[in-house]
Structure formats: C-alpha cells, structure tokens
Length: 296
Image (cartoon, rainbow, N blue to C red):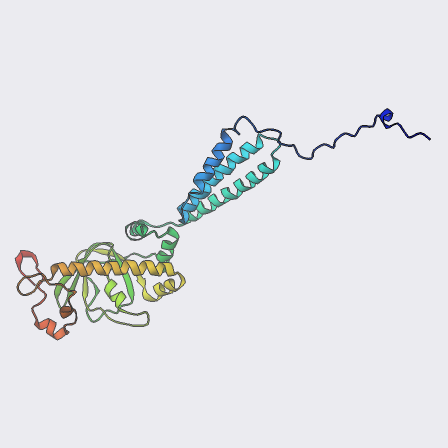
C-alpha cells in the first residue's frame, strides 16, 4: 500500500484570527488635541490644595479632564474599555463637585460673622466648616451693649464666657483708673479666660464699660470647652488667638506705664509683677498720661 500523497491533497492550515488587534507600528501622528487637553486638566487638577475650596478646585479639573478623555475614547471604536472607564470617572468627579459645592453653599453666615471670619480666622487657615461649628456653639447670636453700660464690674461679674467685640469701644478701668481701650475684633475677656482652668471659677478684676453703643458675640465657657473636646484643632486656634490678644493688651499697657520720674516702666519686670496689691496702691508706680498733659 502506497503512502498517501499529502501534496496532492493540498491541505493548507490557515492561522487563527488574532483575538486583539496587534500594534504593528508606532503612529507617526499624535493622539489629537482632545487627548492632550484631557491630560492637561488632570495635571492641574492634581495640584489642588486642601479644604473645601481645594476639593472644589481638584474635582472641577478632574471632571474636565475625564470628560475630555471620554470624548477622545468615543472617537475610536476600538477603545470601548477606555471610554467606559473615562465616563465612569467623569461621573464620579462630577458628583463630587456637586457635593462639595452644595456643602459650601450650605455654610451661610450673616454679615457680622463673615467679617469676624475674615478678620480673625481666615488668615489662620480656618475652613468655613470649622468656623460654622464655632458660630453654632454661640448660637449665632450678636449681643448689644448700650453706651455707659458695663459688660463686667470689678469684683462682681463672674467669668463665665469668652467674648469678641464686633463694633464700638470698651473702656477698661481698675479701681477707677483707666487702663486701656478694647477695639473691634479684640477679645473682651481674654486675660480672665486664660487665667482660669475649665473647672475653676472667678470674677473680673477690672471694669469694662461701653464708651459707645457696642455689639459683641459671646461663647459660654461650658459649650466652648465641649467644642474643644470634640475638635482639638479648634481648641488650638482659640488658644492662639486668645494669647495673641493678651500679648497685644500687655504691650499696649507697657507703652503707657511710667514711673515717678516719668521714665518708661516695663510691666514685665518681676519687681512690678510680684508687688503685693497694698504696696502697689501706695506706690506711685503706674502713671498713665491722659488728655491735657496730666497723669491719672
């Protein structure tokens, strides 16, 4: 029996078709302007900062970047997976933009608290959401004080709050002697606040009287300490602004202090700081110049 003639049978095996199209050669042209624009938006998006405005910046550029990437993928019928992923990421980023914008819009402050935020807290990097918690702890109330009315009386008024003056002017006196003024966006009772621990109680050692109609905002001690316990960041911010306010008041007093020979006297000297109250009253140490060239 003769072997079969395979050449005569002319069997030919055709190669199976490739499941994926192979890249036969590099493209000589670029991917197009939409592709590059998408990556530019993504580049700027990932340079966003922190906070709500940083998140809004970040997700806005990511939304634009993935939208352009979706358009680029749509033009090529062979990039179905790229199109689906780009579209999904575009939808997620768009949702984040709407969510952050809604939260920013929900933080609504009246004119007084907006000015308080810009003058005292914004420069420290406090976000609107944290400031909203600060406003909520004082119930968002702005209190008024008529001219010649006292905010606190020496030896009588209890130290039970922390207050910031919004408008007007407060005169501070001790034993009837003028010490200094308190101006808008300064604390009314920062020294008293800092002198007591949360569990301690005390009374004012000075009298605070309104020189003109005043408006101020006040936080109750208990509510403010509860806020500090929940948010350590807010506690650090208040510690910073309160102690800065105390330092400014001490330096203003130091500029007005003179001894009996009309020489400048430094209030930080131990001989003054540790002098007993009875000796301080007898000694002519603190001479504060007033109008007309006289001393009080």
